[in-house]
Image (cartoon, rainbow, N blue to C red; front, side, top):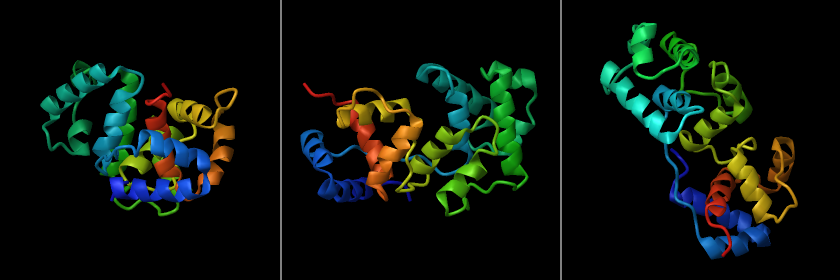
Length: 205
């Protein structure tokens, strides 16, 4: 189950009871909408396809990929295609390497995306075995596809900027500093991450 609107609301209410700043801003801009993604390799594959390209370019590549592989394609379907076929879908050599790494691990049963370790750090370690999936991508997947309530993607620039504005800091906190700041919001850092994106998109007038 992902982080539903109800789970986000309950988490933020718990934080707001202890944090006056969050309480004030929550009252001003309201609760964020949930961001739910399907669990499984397709969500990670879309992450790989979308890396370092525009939303429009990523959408175009995904459409071509589905047209080539079929809407219900399996990891094996992608592995059966050659370089030129996937290149025609818009996948660069690097993206193909990452996509094949993902599909090979899933197809061989070496990673079961429906049975990742319950421990968050162990789950991140499992996901980052996939080429092209770094800590940030793993945290985003665990937050949106698995709804892990204490996931805190401290390397995300929008989260960093959102926390800077929320706490009125002089400069945007880097990843290490943001991890330390986030400790105050345990065990509800997932809803807080979503709230910081929401806050970032709703600047004070």
